[in-house]
Image (cartoon, rainbow, N blue to C red; front, side, top):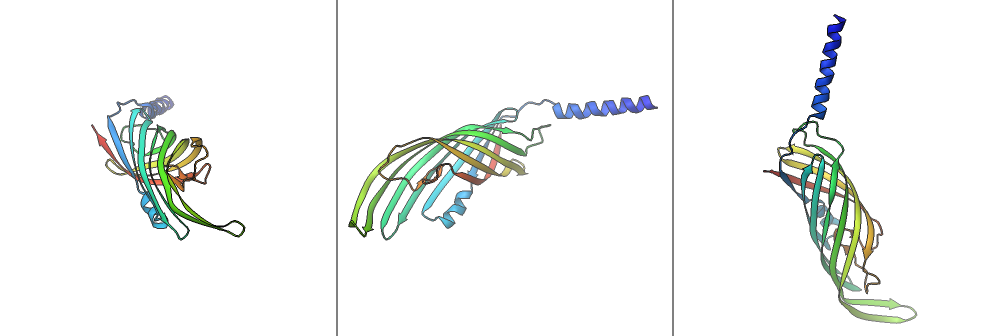
Amino acid sequence: MMVTFSVALSAQDENITDTLTKDFDIKPSVRLGFDVSAIGRSIYEPEVRQLEFSLDSELLRNWFFNLEAGMMQVRSEQETFSYSSNGYFLRTGADFNILGRPDEQQNDLVLLGLRYAYSFLQHDAPYFFLENPYWGEHSGSIAQTAYHTHWMELTGGVRAEVFQNLFLGWMLRTKVPLFRTREPEIEPYYIPGFGHGKRSSPVTIHFSVYYRFDF
């Protein structure tokens, strides 16, 4: 009887191991995402408008290669200055699903990733007014100039399948600047895809909705 019980336990362990290590073919698919965080940002920063989309695909098991892109517009009218900018950004990289996928029905993801990002914008100050107790008053304008930024991102986040092929998720991004335009005539107020121009290494969180297209 002890022998029978031992054999049964051994067979059960093998079944569990087979389930966890079971190999299966990756179904070709592309997941399209839309960052809904921009909607909330426009409420407390109405001068900033941004759209951001993403594409990812599981080319290797638990490895998701992605492309992200977006555009931004800033319009600010104050008593002492006027500022406007238009630009876009691109990111590319990969995420690894640390949750694993013991079977093809497991679609929830816990991701760690790395990105390389680039942003370009054109901005100007149609007018500005400065008042100094020593030098007096000074007004003028700054013509449109271009600004470039390159940076890396360390990312981490979650995506949960709430309905078939429909996902909700969030992504935390830690940004490390690499190269940017040196000594610009004016510093950008907001860098597309990066964040406020005065922050050297911003950390941002994004909430998105995704839909996966299977082929």
